Length: 91
Image (cartoon, rainbow, N blue to C red; front, side, top):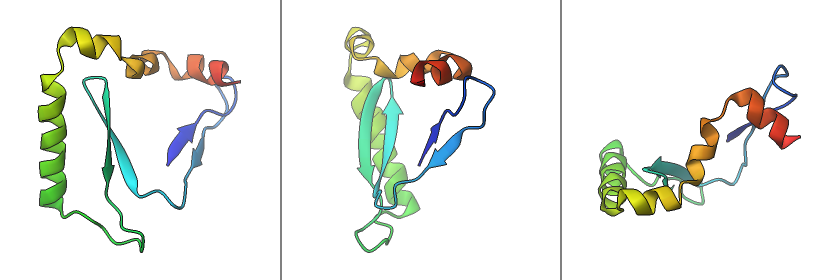
């Protein structure tokens, strides 16, 4: 699911959910990782321990990236702006 800004800062946001989503997006040090967590039939693919291990692996992988390389691909930092700013940009 995602929160989509609605209105130019004062309107209510909309929550949009894709019914066929089977993954989560993890952001670590400005690097994006996709983890499959739901099976085609809607069953969970990972236990809590497995998810914890997968997240630890993501963190370990992200730490390999130098600060300079992470900064070069820092798309995630755009979200540091205020919600109002991004609502206006979306219009």
